Image 1 (cartoon, chains in turn blue, purple):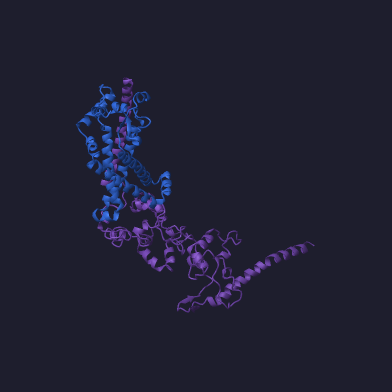
Image 2 (cartoon, helix red, strand yellow):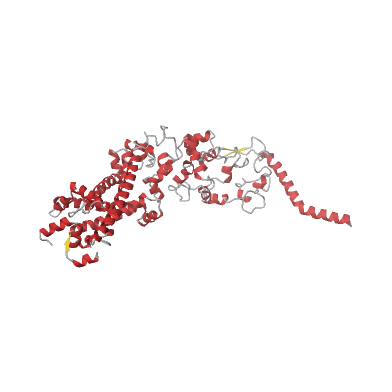
Amino acid sequence: MSSTVGTSSRKVIRLSLLFRMQHLALTLLLTVLAITGFALMYHENSLSQWIIRFEGGIVGRGIVHRIAAVLLMANVIYHAFYMLFSREGKPELRQFFIGRQDIDDFFQSLRYNLGTTKEYPRFGKYGYKEKFQYWGAAVGILLVSLTGIMLWGEEYSMIFFPKVVLDLAVIIHGYQGLLAFAILFLWHLYNVHLHPSVFPMDPSWITGKVSAEWMRAEHPLEYEKLKEEGLL
Amino acid sequence: MRKFTLAAVLVFLGGAFLPGFARDASASISLEKCTLCHGKPEFRKLLVDGQIRDLFVTGDSLAGSVHGKKVCTDCHFDVSEIPHRERPKRVACTHCHFKGNNEGAPQSDNVLAYFDSAHGTAIARGNTKAPLCQDCHGSHAILKVKDPGAKVARGNVAETCGKCHMEIYAQFKGSIHGAALAKGITEVPSCTGCHGEHRIYSRNDPKSTIYSTHVSEQCSKCHSSVKIMGKFGIETEQVATYKESFHGVANQFGSRTVANCSSCHGVHDIRPPDDPLSMVNPKNVPKTCGKCHPGANPNFAVGKIHVDAKNKESGIIYWTATFFKWLTIGTMLALVAHIFLDMYGRTRRLRGEQ
């Protein structure tokens, strides 16, 4: 790996400053939400109890959780508007659309990994891995936010919903949070830390840049597009 | 010489025992003397507030009690002349019942526990209405706790407490616990079952068994026991589901404002849910929840309150939880499989390229 980086020191921008800030906010807030949330979900665990005491008891924990949740929702809403209406966001969003190609790519990569084909799929800026992560997080955050708001204003919610709906909201909030967290841990951390091409860490979340060589190996379509546009 | 020695020994022994004999003799005489007045059935006193204090005591008053062999002045030891001029002081049981006593009186720390309790500290503050030992255990007819006739026996203790706590006793009699007690069911708690015996504290005292953060623990002593609840067809999952709920978790972390068992089910007036007077009867649930959640409507009564997501009977909640459980497990397995495949394939690709 070091040899490939060494031969080409040219860098390509992959994440603009605004995206990096959104990502950093997301990282910090999700961490706070996970720590405060799972401490409550697994409150019988001694570590959880220590965490809850650290956060100022059961009331303090809730306040920390809600502050982080409000900031996260603000971050997500900002991101949604940015992706829908900004000059930089609109083409990015288009590249995140899931198409027939992604499904084909997925199966081709499976076949390749199993050794039944010699061709590895050629990805654009975002391959099926990135798309799965992105939309998975979007759906997860949406579900957790909606149920979380319901539970936050439980007296107001119960004007409209019977108790069983709120019980359901508790279940969805907790389990969806767990699922999102598990996917983040297994999938995202693998892709950006443990993956052989980036180990020990893909630096783009801090610097915003990746090496042109990495782009050529992992996202050849994007590499070629940049080359055609004369950006490389 | 020998006769002299014998006589000397007898005189010596007599000297040693004579005071004892003399005391016994004087005591028995005092019993007879006491009953000269107290043995008349009409011997009573009209108190200032119009109540009548019955002063009728006979030689049989102690018969059959744990103090059957005692005499009046063993306890009323401040009576030194008969007739006594002043009203004798209230009997202090600790005169004999202290640790290390020579009388052979049962000894325990209960006395010390009592002095620390709500009743004992009230006495110490000068509250003359607060109970002493004899107010609960009885004065002359004291029986052992296990004796069903004892004032502190399981079946009688509520009535004993009710002498002072009248309103609460009335509520308790109407409750499921009171009704079961009246039927002679032995598992059911009476006052002392929840409040403790000598260690009775104010509900605002953190030492109390019924302090707001201790209530669920106290109820769960019986209500989480399948052995006890099984007899009456009552579910035991309520305790566990409460502890898993937002109320229960906050309670375990020391919140005193959050609902505990008695906030919803009542305290002395606990009734089964199908009883229209029960606080947890579906008709009354909005009002009960409304104590803390202003504006609670009938929505609060729709669906089970004690929900266990692990129990199939919870319906959609169980199925949602199960769905998510398997979704998470399935996703994890798929991701792990994909990661290993990817690493394997990727390593091969990188090798091939170099």
